Image 1 (cartoon, chains in turn blue, brown, green, red):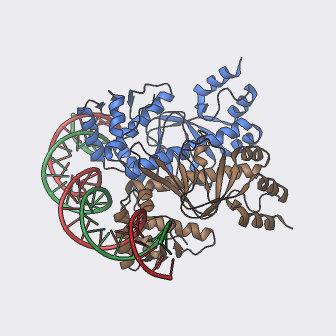
Image 2: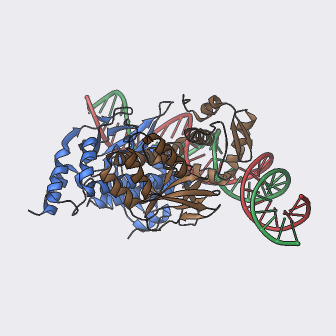
Image 3: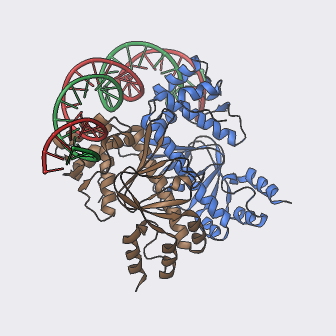
Length: 240
Length: 240
DNA sequence: CGATTTGTTGATCTTACTCAATAATCGTGG
DNA sequence: CCACGATTATTGAGTAAGATCAACAAATCG
């Protein structure tokens, strides 16, 4: 059995494809990494994975479903920080303070893998490629957050929604799912909140993009009819 | 000579206080970390430290002065991503892609230390506490970016500026500088851009906060007259 | 199947942007 | 060191993008 095969099997099982680096770990190392992962934490819609202020012990990899993270400000308003799809990792913001700075909640029936961070620290001291990969993972999250920053600082409502949909599309594509037809796991209110808009604005722009034959919107089902037009409204260069 | 002393000396010399963990590295380890740092890259106002797209080789620690990072969008507009003060580290967003995703430019005469990332990778495999600290550094940046996200998504112009000044104040305090009187190293246009506002709005709000006896503003010199009022306008709980 | 939540559409209002003019500051060279 | 132009900051007036308020429609759930 070659190591790539082993890797793929464990991937499908626990969403570790983000944590592991395909082709760079030996079969034995992969087994080690595999052994620290606690599988199958099943969550129902609206279940909490962790709460703001909880002691930080583990990162979580989404295996199926989807999770949103948010924090509550002084007036009690929720502020959505991020959406996590299968294969993505949450909790990295908590490593520094050792407390979760956000609350994580399932947007639909989901399952996640728990990866005790202490084990990662120990393992990544010995497995160079795991350490390298952890640095990359954390760096990728920084870059992602900075892209969102740019979106929120200057872009119009239409640009924000366009870029948001393009981003989702690319993330689904990475997971080998359709990049043109997908189901939004989050409510309009969550999209609005995440993008710093009012729900009504999100609704209006979905309608507008549908009228312009850029999208087909049926509730949470989205079809991107023209990737080019969607990039145009977002003022984004089209990815190849 | 005890290790703490050694640490403090090297700190003042090269701004490594952020990269090292006081009291957790042995004197020998500290010397090792010290040895990978290239000191004293002096920069004049408007000099570039690196450019968007450059190959990533090193992180940089600001030793004196201040650096801004920004990226240029498709229409050629600058979008400010962050401001870096003495003791802070830039470049962490580039680890994943191995290319700088932003351009870094000195806002005043500055000097930085260059820390080759490959050396960090090698060293942090052997020095457990350095690895732990690197994870924390990256995590802290994620958390910081997410806080800014919240600011940009929902807050009013006044709240943004209030929170921005409070944040600067705390960062100066951490560096043992006055938290109530300091010089803004960046232009109004940079503040506006960073906070997603128009220059005129920043100017007006500075005037308004001055009239309300919250601030004293004299060009780039800022004095916070009432920390409490500043927290109030930002709807922030006052830090102790 | 009715109740509650979620999404859409319309009318009005507000915050912050744009445009414009002026004032202050900075940087450079005489 | 001062004078000059250029950049940067302030202030005012008008405007627009998106928020809020309100009513209704559709989807979800027990």
